[in-house]
Length: 439
Image 1 (cartoon, helix red, strand yellow):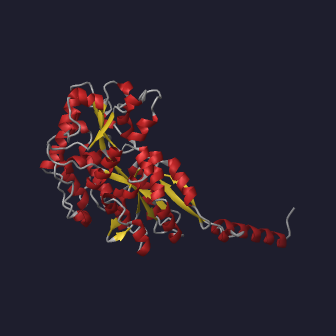
Image 2: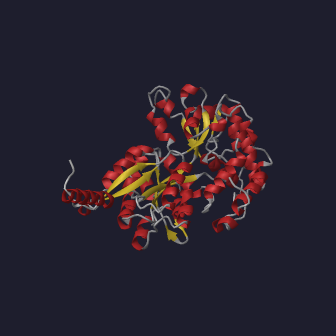
Image 3: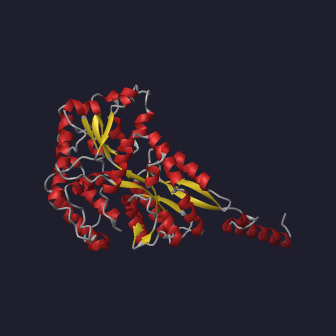
């Protein structure tokens, strides 16, 4: 049966109204409800981040968690694609500090100004982290947690090797000690960002840099300095470990998780390992469980000290990382998003991330809090804080993703690294920055 024309017009009008409501999401009193702020997070600390999203939501806005991929490179790619398309639904984002310059240079981040900038970056923020959220004389992100690497080790292994761990140790000493005492050395040497972290720290520990720090913010015109004595010293450490008995079976594909596994007592003599702050809570969490320390005595066999020296007598440069919270420049709710960013990065939030997840604070006052002193050995808190402030950041460049990929392509596999690697990588990196070569 055919409907009367009037009825058809009425149905069409109703359908159009429904469609308009679905597109604009402004019908049925929607404008009076709280705004939804999308927060894109990396997988670290999900339980606490979800709790923070709930506790920081207000009558004006609700924070919705969206999970990014596990790889820092893939996180950057997904967010960059969204922001390049001027996505208005990207309100908050968890950023590896090395990607902040690129995003800020592209005008994808909404700077904090005036009083808000003062709240984000006051004197309580560790100087090693404060630098990561500034670009072009603006505060472009809020530091949430700070990360650094230390040398973790089994005390029994170090004792068997005759190493005095109260004094600085070198990579050569660590590799020799492990090789001669049935131990291993855990690193992150897969073809990914963490391998560049290791390379960068080795080079800086020898007094050099991948790029000249005085030119690094000039972008494509930055001076490449990886081909140097420091670059050769770094390559020598990687080459020595690759050819030693201390190299782990999965050396060329190792990551943070696989290298940690060799620390447990069930694996034998154990290891020396450079890794991030999460290690302590992870190891402590396995107390009395299969594969983990069977009792407190075995737990206390876990030692920690300053990142190893590349060159004997020259202060090491521990890696510096963490997460900064950026606000999308195209957010429909910029003021609310910046309020939310301040809430999820305040001292209370940082304390929860440290105690629950092993993700350490970017604020001095939180290190001094009773909560952290109860959760961690005081000496470890001091070591982390000092490592963050005296560590070596990766190049602060708007082209960092290209720099990192170029280095990975010439330094991986680590078993192929040799004296000529720094020079070959310098030539390729220069071509990448100048546009003469493609990744």
